[in-house]
Length: 304
Picture 1 (cartoon, rainbow, N blue to C red):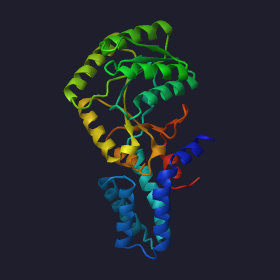
Picture 2: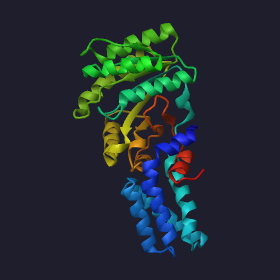
Picture 3: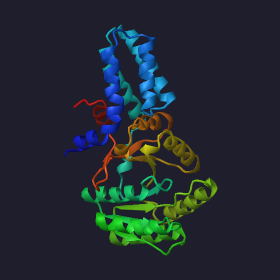
Picture 4: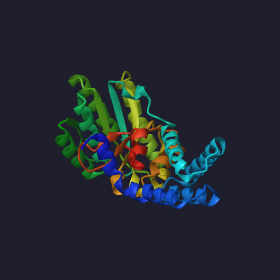
């Protein structure tokens, strides 16, 4: 499968839920009236686009319909595609996010696929010819280091780890020294996913940040938040809380293949000034993709 085919396959549940219903609405409607708009807005909300984003999209479509004096519901399809692309492109990942050497601090609650995303990301960088090092800085969860070690083996990259309960900042310190010695391009750090106490999380990450600033000032620093698409609007709530606690500058949305409500990516793009950089569209090690709004909307609406 090519990248676009994988994306289409991964979005099958959402597409069947959303695109087929949009088709049904357009095909059964004879005029563009308030009832048509209400039903289209409802379809957006059912796909987890979120009420705020759905209302904004519909209002913009109404303006376009009025300006262009459109009458055929079929003509709304192109407007919908353009509106979804506009929302998803609002906070596109900037090119300075591809600088090297780089250190990526990965945050997210337990269970969202954080460790899996790190493994897939390591593999992705390695496939691009980059030398990668993993840092097992989630030292509070016994299984976290073991899981990360398995992924380091799958991806074929080195890992720095300490004993359970060790200081996360000490793990990151050692990882930076190792990366410098081995001339690694990328350090990916797993961090604790404890959201119930924001103050502790913030203090812990501040300490890690101080180590990074002191020991590796020349590296580009990225804080990547991992969210689970299957949790719907809860993922948006998590993103808000993490954004209050940490200076996040990119998002990875996992398990898009496992939900019929992948429209949550639109809610995230609309409500948060943080770019969605990666999307997970399958369980394979190569199923973490760079997020491309154009391709996403085409795959969602089944347009080649």
